[in-house]
Length: 339
Image (cartoon, rainbow, N blue to C red; front, top):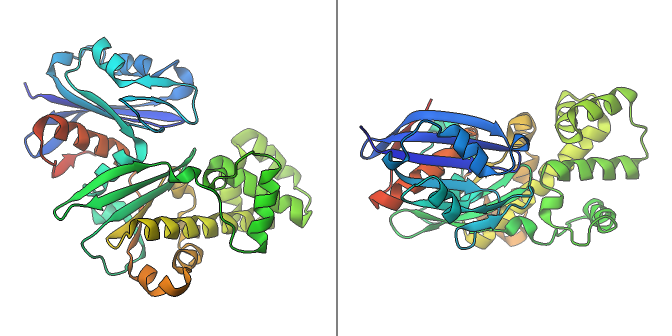
């Protein structure tokens, strides 16, 4: 029997789990599952359900990407009332090795496993050997740096999404003032996330003093504000939605540029997160790249950095598997067979 690698991607809303057969320098999918976190009291319940009937002695190592800062193999999730203890889970299910890593670090471990079909190019640039970086807006805003060691990239976690929002013009200054009345601290995550897009929409609606159409109110109640704003903006039906998404993408590009400068990401910037699939068409409009490059005297440097959107929503799961395999093999996985 092949030994198994166990991987998980535990987000603020959903959890993806997978078991892989170890095939040497590549992994082959054995089983996968997706779960809604609201149906469970914690990840141990999800794991127990997923691996029911599995001989855990066959699991050589497990890696879980998780949406929170990980300290000592333990964390309190940022956008969910769960405390996750990796060592406790390891003992409960009798797994040899189990480590938690930040969810963006997991995606970063998966980047080198992606094909060209898994990426959408926003800026081709001229990639150089050096650092890369990753930014992802979803339930929250995640950021990670991929440090170049001369041979390969070593992902490092970050809580850059919680840094202070820095407005660049009068419209964004107004947004900061608006949000300061709501939150004690206005971070980029308050803007570049699902709840953040809702904040932007409410701000634009307030300053433009536009009446909200009845059909929109009904859709918001049934589907949630952020997904509806994205769809309405792209279809062009509602001006407030269109302006809100435009502002969201502009700030997203600016913060991606900030991260690129701080990490000197000459190898490229990767854009991920759960919001991306809904706004792909809008991301191609040029607004994102215009803000990304708008760094004064460093405009030329920014134009040379590749910018790619990650299309594969299982990248974090693949990265967690690659990390788990490295825990016991000590080598980097070259390929994962995953449908």
